[in-house]
Image (cartoon, rainbow, N blue to C red; front, side):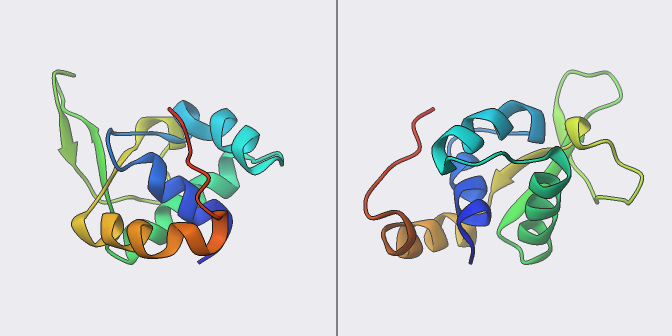
Length: 105
C-alpha cells in the first residue's frame, strides 16, 4: 500500500471524511501536493478492496447512507469511513511506512 492510500485510510478511522475535508491535511502530512482526483481515486480503490465504506447524504440531508460510487459522482459528495478490515490494516502497516508518525486531526 502506498503512503497516500494508507494516510487516507487512517483519516477515516474515527470519523466520516470526504476528499475536501482531508485533502489539505493529508498534503501537509505527506509533504506533497495532492489533487482531488488522486485522493478520490485512492478512496475509491480502498472502497473497492473493502477497506472503506462510501456514504452520501440522505434525501432529507439528515443522515449519511451507504452508497455505491459511480463515475459521475462529485468527490465532495461522498463521505468515507473505515471498515474493521481497514482499521486492522492501518494498525498493521502504519509504522512500516511512517515510523510511528501519526496524522493528527
